[in-house]
Length: 226
Image: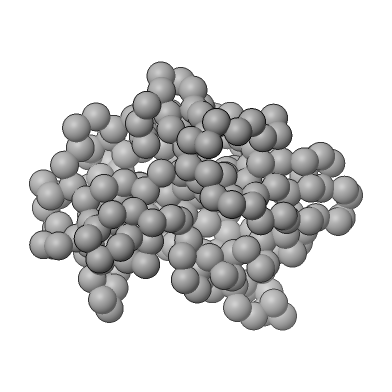
């Protein structure tokens, strides 16, 4: 069993790695259950359950079995709050990002142009690159984060790893919430392009939206897009 499908990857060999940056990947996690009944969406947050991958399959570390249908939420890479002082993984979406996501996910998704079929879904969250591409720098250096992210994703098998994880999870819907906005060179656009090449149809199989750290003004339509 493994956190991802990247074999023998060494974060310290990335060109813009900074000393003392975390080197371990953070596993994808089950975070709760979303029920959809027409326009009414209810998100029930549950205890985190990390995911292990093997071949073209996955399992929850608790050995629990959840709903059959999955929604996969993609962020770009783990932030410094998601590791302890020794560089060991804690959990996904800690701090402000997690607070805004868990409080507002159902509401923002109810406003989405992508229509969800009624039912109950696992909500699984993960990063396109599971390694700390920001190297824990405080304040964050977005140039270094993006350089490391692109190197891992485009040169060291990160894109293939994301594809294999998606094909293992087999989500009914995928939601790309990576940072980067509408810039064609931005991380969100790179991931959406990958989803297209994987065969997912935008508006049917996947949608994209602003990073949860910007979900702080519900009356600002620019922050409601998923």
